[in-house]
Length: 352
Image (cartoon, rainbow, N blue to C red; front, side, top):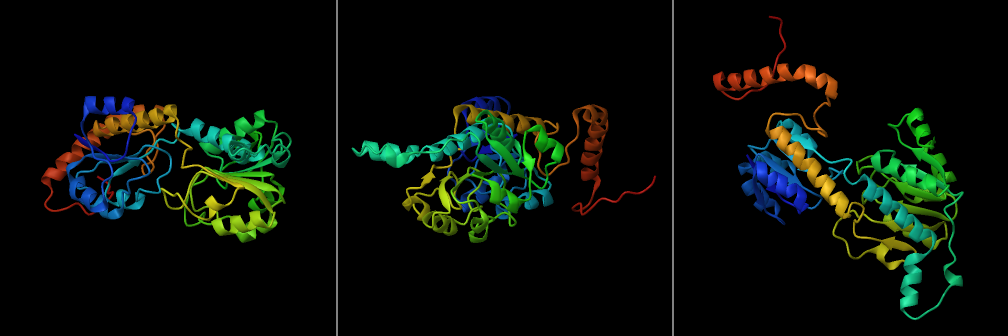
C-alpha cells in the first residue's frame, strides 16, 4: 500500500505511517505534477497547501482515502471524491485546543493593544496613556459557530467572566446551555456583542457573511477575531468600519488567499494579523498527524475511519454487531468484481 504525503507532517505520525505502508514525501507539487503521479497511490495526506481538486481525484484511479491533517476541507473536492468512491477523512479534534487558545490570545492582544504598544516601545516611544485597553470581564462575547473550537473558546472565555452568546443553526438549546451560552439570532448577536469570534467553515452561504450591512447593526466599539477561514469577512467593509470608529479593532489569522503578506488589512494599526497560526503548536501538529495516519492505516486494512466526512458514522457498539456482515459484503463485492463484465454502474435492492 502506497501513501503520498503532499504537505509537511509531524515526525511522530510519519514514523507510524512508514512502519506500516510505503510512503513517498513529495512537497510543493504543482497541479499537473500531482495529477501525473496520484494514480500510483492508495492514499494521500494533505494539510492546507495542496489542492485535491476534481481533476486530481479523477487521476487517482487507485485512491481509497484522502486525509486532511486538520479540520477544514476547503482544499478537497468532497463531492468528486464521493462520486469516485474515495473516503475523505480529517482530524477535527487534534488542533481544537491550539485554535481556541490562539483565539483567546488575539482577543487579549486586541483588548490591551499589545501589538501597537510593543511596536512603539521598540521604536523608542513610551505611550502608556495612548494604549489604555479594556477588560474582558463582563464583556459580551458573540461566538458564531459552536463546534469543537467555538465550544473551546466558550470554556476559556468563561474563565475571564465574559457573558457568552452564540449562533449556530445546528446547535441545540440544550447543548448551548451546557456551555453557558445563550443562543440568539445572528442579527441580535451582532447588536449585543462587545467581541465577536468566528468558528465556521467557508461555504457559498458563509462567504462574505460579515460586510457593511452587518457592521452597521453592530455595537460601537466592537472587536472581531477570525481564526476560522479567510473570506468570511469583507476586508474593505471591515477597514471602513474601523476608520469610521464603529469597530475598535480586529484580529485576523486567516486570509482568502494564502500565503498573504500584503493587503488592506496590513496597512491599519488597529488590525492584528498572524500567518494562519491557529493550529500551529507542536502538540496540535502531532495530534492531527497521528489522527489521520491512524485512520489511513485502518481504512487500508479494511477497518472504518473515526472521522470520515463522506461516509455515515456507525456507533462503536453497533459496529461490533455489523462487522461480520461487513466482512462478508467485502468478500462478495470482490467476487462480483471478478465475475462482472464491464464497469459497475449501480446497485439495485431486490427480494431474494
